[in-house]
Amino acid sequence: DVKVTQSSRYLVKRTGEKVFLECVQDMDHENMFWYRQDPGLGLRLIYFSYDVKMKEKGDIPEGYSVSREKKERFSLILESASTNQTSMYLCASSSLAMTSGSLLETQYFGPGTRLLVL
Amino acid sequence: GNSVTQMEGPVTLSEEAFLTINCTYTATGYPSLFWYVQYPGEGLQLLLKATKADDKGSNKGFEATYRKETTSFHLEKGSVQVSDSAVYFCALGGRDDKIIFGKGTRLHILP
Image 1 (cartoon, rainbow over the protein chains, first blue to last red):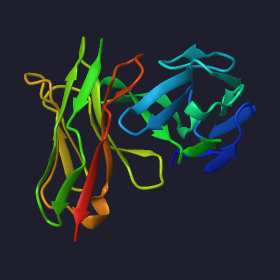
Image 2 (cartoon, one colour):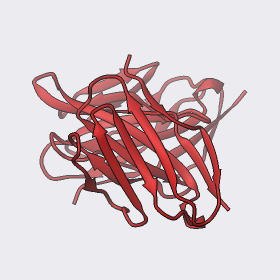
Image 3 (cartoon, rainbow over the protein chains, first blue to last red):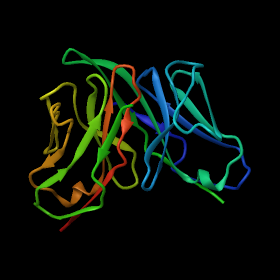
Image 4 (cartoon, chains in turn orange, blue):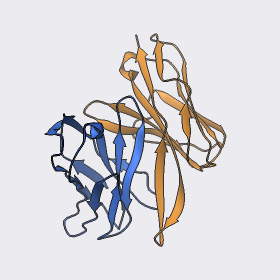
């Protein structure tokens, strides 16, 4: 089974702190993603990475950065946490696989980190 | 651009009722379609998927059929259980595309 783990289930931080959220996957997937999930807004993509040391902005990258030094690890960094970054953060990984003659990307998710910024 | 629209929740049903959660999409080309489920306190799990028109994905008693003519991928289950209470996300994706998620539909099943 694919396993995606996140370093913390719950975090409480203060405004202005630097926050690191870690994500590790054990299936040698090329692609990794960070989302935030908020009531009424669903999942919004923050950043993603298709390879080591490679990163691409998603839909809402402002206030965040990422690091992918190793294939299995994708870190999300809040440089200076703000209260509007209080949210559930979900990490996912994927690789393209041939299914029924088509290439299919299926994402596998970690359990999430619920971050509260005071 | 590509988008997914799913019915707003919450949806509340009694145990053993029939479930339908509607999902429609807008896309260029022929995307793959997914349903993900998120149980309380957990991340998302892939529930089922379909890769081309008329494909039917199924898992755990849930089914969804890829309908190209109506651009829909509605989720159905004949008899729901309390343990099916969760948030359900419809999603679409392509070969190199990011996966696009709907906003989620919360389902409550009453005993």
